[in-house]
Length: 388
Image 1 (cartoon, helix red, strand yellow):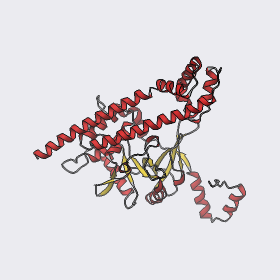
Image 2 (image 1 turned 45 degrees about the vertical axis):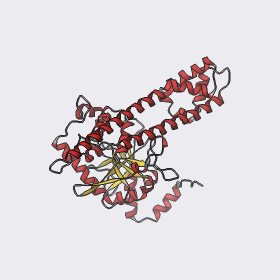
Image 3 (image 1 turned 60 degrees about the vertical axis):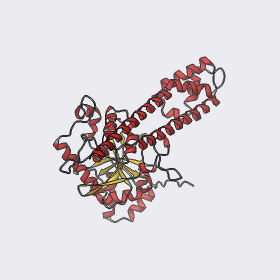
């Protein structure tokens, strides 16, 4: 049975304060003061608008980083190695920074960055969050949730414990540097990084988008030594999988760079294909479940507005109503005019209106293109190895 959350009364609070020393009272006030605080503005906050113009060429390939940018990124890597030194946790980098670290080193041993990276992203295990929080506290970092304030402008950072550290439609999870009182600080090379939490099902299998099972190797870390510290990389297949879920133009060129350096195999392409096919099936099943429930609530003679109102009774449709209202209203009109209120008829129209199959087929074509590129790259590498 789920335990009710304890909310202390005023009498409880006064009683507890009466048992505190003056030092404990002061510490409690400090913690309360910094429980919520404004998220500091940093350059990253502006990059989404300016990144392509500043850091990509006309083909959306990352530009060669400048010396000061290389120095900054080197600082991130060094700090990251220090933060997780001795943690014993299953953590690893996400995103394109992996590609830079997988890349062949320069002749002097320095990291051969493929470009300037916006930030640092990590994956961590959900069942290791208690240990993660304890370890980070020793290193001067805390777990925070970021959300836009009521005015819709500034970001608010809320300090939380491991049990409340998770993404939601309103909250974004971050690890941020802080002082001993919990106030955010920005005087470290790596003062903030995004976190992706590895979820698992009851059988212990790692889950990807849409809750589908992904290969266990994608949930594991692959350590390398950088600047005398251990840095954990993602599996190349995982990097490819999540890059394919992005719609940014430079994700395509990042994928091509990942293939070019020989890190994607035919097996990786097959794993990604299987994961996406599972997602397609999961989405189709969700659509069927939702609109079967809608069909059960419809009655002959309902007009389009009444049909639309029935649709909004479904939680999954209601929470996304702002984004899909036009499609739902069009669907309601089609149902009203056709008179076909069966689940099969509705699902057929949903599939056409959403373009779901077209989107799925485009992804299948892209994965096949990647498979062919990976195969060609592997063959070229084999020829070079024989020559050498």
